[in-house]
Every structure is written in C-alpha cells, then in structure tokens.
Image (cartoon, rainbow, N blue to C red; front, side):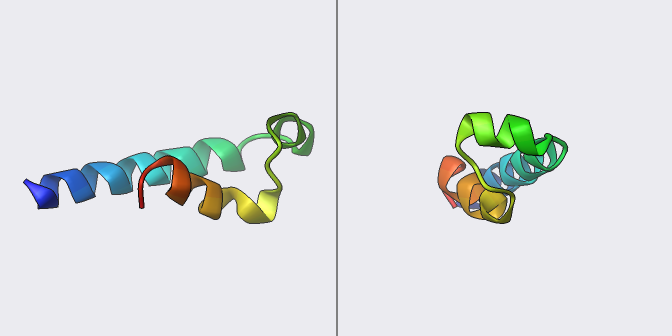
Length: 48
C-alpha cells in the first residue's frame, strides 16, 4: 500500500511542477510563487 501511495504522490508532484512551469511569471506572482521555488512548493503541496 505504501508503494502505491508513494507513486501517486510522485505523480501528483510531477503534474504540479509541470502545470506551474507552464505558467507565466505574472500568473506565478499572483499565486505568490517564485519560479525557483516551484519544486519546493510542489513537494509541500503533495506531501513529499
């Protein structure tokens, strides 16, 4: 069960990073996220 949960969390992390990477600087600013913090934000948001 932990393996499945870990894989699902990793998939969500990658999806979050991909979606945030596609955003413009203005969109990221509106969310309060700096581009260099995308991975940190995605880790926190997805429980990694």
